Amino acid sequence: MEYKNIEEEIANRIYDLDNEAYKSCKSDLGKLYSGSRANSIHQIIQTLKSGDMHEITNEIMLISNMINTVPKGEEFNRLNEECVALNEIISNYVRKGITADIEMDEYSLPIRYKDSNSPHTIISIGREFGSGGHEIGYLLAQKLGFSFYDKEILTMANSELGLDASASDESTSTLSFGASLAKKKFSYFGITTSDALFFKQSELIIKIAQREDCVILGRCADVILQKEGIACHSIYIGAPIEARIARKMKIENISEEEAKKLVKSVDKKRRDYYNHYTGRKWGHSGNYDLSISSAALGIDGTVDMILRMVNKTLAVKDSL
Picture 1 (spheres, rainbow, N blue to C red):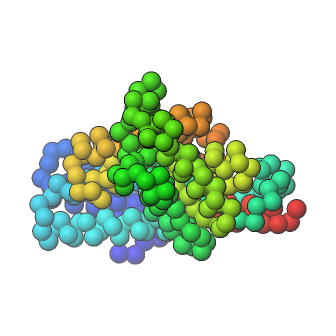
Picture 2 (picture 1 turned 135 degrees about the vertical axis):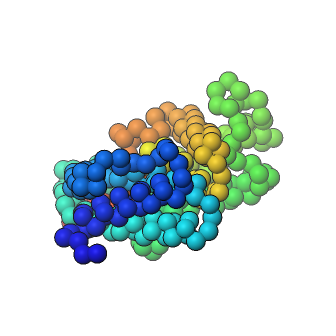
């Protein structure tokens, strides 16, 4: 079928996929568009033109959930393939829509970049669980030719402290922060295992930042480096909880209830860890150079947006 423009193609394919998934799952619930085809297509096109990609991506997610109720087989494969193809088209549409340049001059450049003598570029990424932060950080490092650090820092810290590899940190710790933090003692100077790991990881993060360009995921790296006087680009990646739950359901092959419980649990641990060790509020936009929703731009679109900001900042710094 020939379409007048990309918005019309996306709108028609979303409507058709919703209708076909609804029929295939033989459910009385779940259909997104109950009005006429013409009105529904018009509604989707207007949403696309408004730039409200949260609504569009959430609708695709709901259709995907409906497809997952279809018995596995030829029909399920066909619908799933169309859903994947549609997501790719929408991601390309979003990327092409990011045309406005990022305006930045020496007055808008954060003071730490003006005063920093660090020869290296460091990107620190905080992220909500299920937002795709790990994948985004890895792809960003790949495109920049930087090193990428996530759990490798924890592994090194465990090794240097002589701790079992199972000793954990921000996303997996079973420790409760607050009064109960002191209950589990580390055998070195009587401090807690959690404190020992935090201090050792802080030391490693500083050493890494002093020797190479890199992307560091989590572990309070933004605050650790800022307090050390090392300039870093601090990024926070989030997404609507429905999108994060759907992502984890697909990746982990778990139920919606299991995914919801997992997302909330890990988010709480990361929030408690960050707030406890930094004295700041995890996820508060004022703490970061850029806060972005991966659901709005997709994985590739989010990577591109961060790249644009980092490259623009470096260009301004070099011109000073």
